[in-house]
Image (tube, rainbow, N blue to C red; front, side):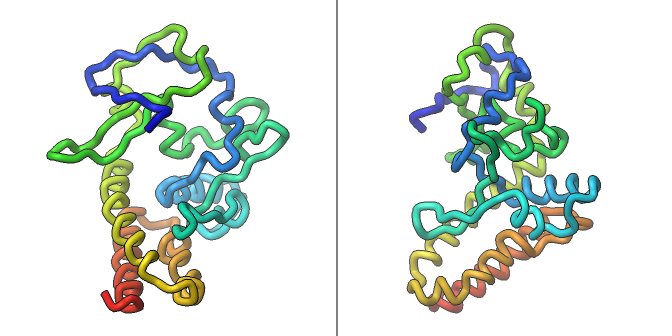
Length: 219
């Protein structure tokens, strides 16, 4: 990662949030809400009467894209000449309580580790220099406050599922992919009950989708 450096849980990092909203701007093509993010946001927005179902979130607040030309994803809508996050209102996050994981972890990010290490942590090196001019935070404290057990479970499971799904997508012909695109979107993004816990639904969806695609490409 050219825009990040490795940090350890015991590291102290200079950082202070100045509530400037800079990290919420210039986001076109840069913020991909994960399924867990979407589930939390959809539940939060449903309480405000702005949607009813998971699919409504993707329809109203995101646009479809393809990662590396073959993996279907959704990116967050932006607004205004500075491509602000669609949820930035009057310089403040209007969904702060349910904001995506990438927003909660900033200025850090996390990826599943290897060789017995649960996660690797990185500090984002962006152009918001005033964020890093004073103050100090301890990485492990920041993660304890903002990186929940559910986040960790999802990120670990998703890492493995992405590898298998990527393999299956590449093994499909263009016609097979087109014919099954709705099923892919359904199980990856839409088939979630907002009244039920996320992880059991996610695991069941991924199991069913993987079996469907394995049958299509002959395992």
